[in-house]
Length: 268
Image 1 (tube, rainbow, N blue to C red):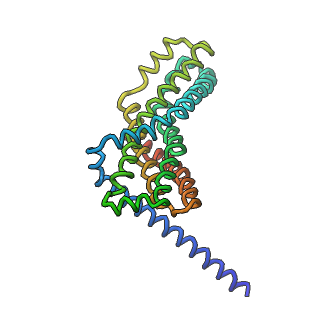
Image 2 (cartoon, rainbow, N blue to C red):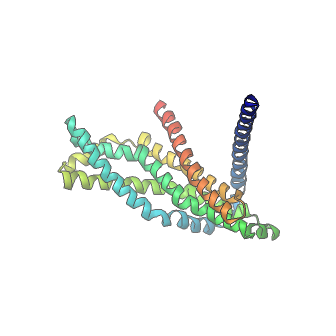
Image 3 (cartoon, rainbow, N blue to C red):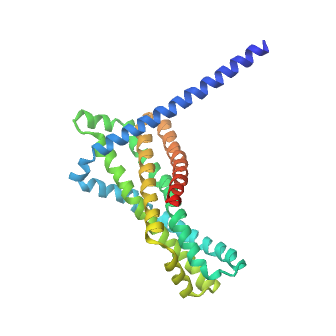
């Protein structure tokens, strides 16, 4: 009797694992298919750039406050922690190098992507999910208007455009925050701060690699947000769950992609 219950429980567990794994594979395939449809339907964005500009304002400009404030405090923390660490080894003048490289290589693109997913990604998911729930997307199809070309594609390209710009602003404001802590507050020489930073930060291996990361993160976060909204059940609970999945999935994908891209760039 006990053995039969254990066997039944094990079979049920394996079945649940298999069904969830199959669902994840199906969702990955559906997301890749939607990505392909968006790329193919992007001609509408070229003919109507105003659609993309409007979404850039919604996803990029409306995210500036949280991006800039977070960048300023991250830079200040890097300045404090970096000075305390470098002072132990007598290298406190290199604080500018530490702040700049930390932001440009890793923290700038990654934190920007995480904040973007939490603010703009959830908004995109909720908006598309609500349009689906109120049958606006179905109405567009009935009028022979492609919702992928008119609704999804502009949001996708807006996210891809906005992400590297936000990441660049994050890095600049973060460096400013580190400077304000290191020079006026702690007393590090301003000339040493800027000169060592300029001598150590490489345009190709640091800045371009960081911008490339932000573009990849922009593609990933935006397509996840669009897919979750487009695939959400047309109910209030369905849209709510979709926005939650957007944040969780985007965060995990960004961190995983960051490791993969960093490994590839280091080997280069």
